[in-house]
Length: 424
Image (tube, rainbow, N blue to C red; front, side, top):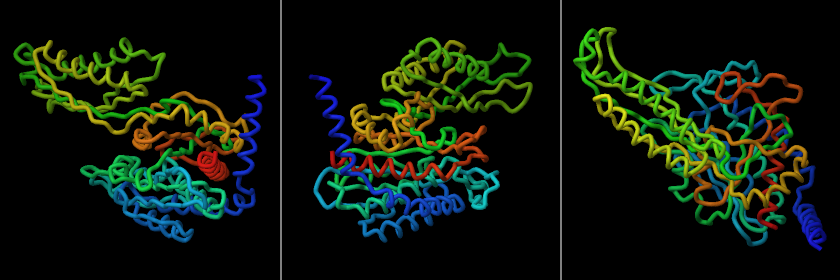
């Protein structure tokens, strides 16, 4: 009996998918546009909170589709609202629109030659993380769905988010600011979906993980105080460099000896240490900065507490003192297990069951997590590595490259997930 009920549910799901599905001609009609938009954005990248021309192009497109459009959300964000022909829930779709301070090294006809200023220096600007593809895909989804309002039971909110890579120094931005400004309200969003292109996943594949999928990112700053003395007489002072070395060593034991890494991964990295001015002077102070990455809220709380205890205690043990400040950069990108279970059949129907694969958690971070902290969300990875490619380059590098043939699957997947979530 149980088997018969299960088969009946599966059959019903397939029927609903067929009823809600978009005709293939609507997708083929949009593919060339999506590729053109992507290449335009790639050639004309803009840094975080400075995505003025990018926002203008998005705004113009959404308005041409007859949507209600809100601009200047979190500085340069654009939000479009598409109401279906029937009432229902509200689903949000998000794409990030900013680029990185990277000089592109690819030989492409649409290669970026843009320069700008970052932290007071002249820099190249490049879409070295694929946000140009995310923007173009979501614009394509908006066009397809706007032509199929009769299939929409509810409302779809299109969120084009600036500053995912982090707001400039001294500014607010990104998903956190969008949430603070009420992007998930009026109308209230019931669930949110997002995707990230991946240069090392083959075109045609989708990868996902239920639960914690990308890490919470935190920064820390440690100030160590010692006592200055002559380098030939260390006993007459307190060496902050020695204390710093002991602190670094101690912090790593929190990961290697106190964290259950069979549960989730965790990382503490000291990325910079600054101290001293001369070879024969023991300095008075030292500074260390670094990052913490966690995928479990309990582990995050434990690591933060132990770091605060350990930094002060180690410094005291060696005759000095130290303070530590920890700041949140992003939360854990947490895929709601129930939502994942609900939407998995849709993804498998669109991409083929054999092309939808689970993956391990990623210690990279995403501020999509701030949306997921407010409403159930599902964030997945889309293949962007060209067929037959034997070498691919990581994100945030000058050689990063995405194959355009993978974009249409992103359009299809987000489109169908929206319809199935609202209609089923």
